[in-house]
Image (cartoon, rainbow, N blue to C red; front, side):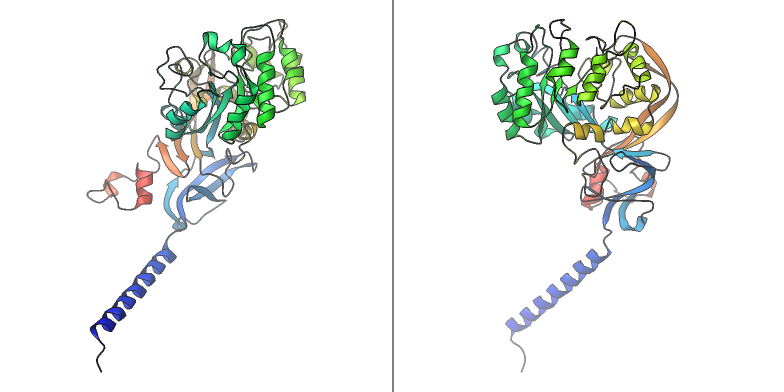
Length: 437
């Protein structure tokens, strides 16, 4: 008896389904487990203490393996980085990126920069905006910049509710409120990673005290740009009494607030602050880094805990330039490459209590920076026009953000065009397209 047409159709449909499952299963079995393999680079991962030639495998935007040798057949794409240094994505904890408001002369406006044009090309994958927005305008900053950036943008809320808008705004004690600042920080825990006080010209302590109060309520550190040097509120009082362990003193080599005594020796208040657990950040900026302070301080082995730029429209075109230029200055001052990378990756990640960042452990976000160390004669300029001639300089060769190549100076991740098929502008494989873009 012949099967009915309906039974025959059902049988054919079942057979086709089984064949499709077999094909998919077979394809999955032969699919390489890693999306990308960085092969043969010198890995410097301060968290694990690694400084050796290693392969780094990435899958689904995460670090999948770091081993002496990983079979290249296990990766969809292999990038040869022999002779280069592979580090966690750089973390710059002092930038100004609240751009786009149109407010003239304001760090909540025209003095700030959209981050992506200035970060990824310097190996920086995470930045912390240092107080451009307060609790009143943080929602606008988040919508305008944070949510639209390829760079990971975190924030320190200004203790001034209106943020870093200059002039009258930053001197308004009535707008320095701990409770609403802490409430917004808690609403955005992990995104808001600190409280900032800056630029205060008065002779009293309320900006610092209220920032510390907000930081205590929200469970986050405070970063202090100490403003004008006033004898009524000396640096010894700030570092010896007001700040807590884990709070951050930025612009630590400026010399503008007596970080160095007239004798040329480091102010004892700096050592006292470090003893109490205060962290010291470079915050180079346009006017906050002096060779005349940094050289003797480093000679006394007073090293920064974190290296940051204080990136804004002024500093990027003067002595600061970018994160790698600032890092190169500390190489010139005698720090090892491992010390410099630690202060630009794992140390800042710990300082802002985001220990998921700044590392290459398995399971961590695949934010990776590939660096070359150039030899030659390079002029490194401080904020006051002084030049130091160096023999080494760091250059970013490639940056990965969540496993995707987002900057590639010399096409390390790209094949020679002559090896590609006609019409190679698209491959049909979404993973390759991710690296091609």
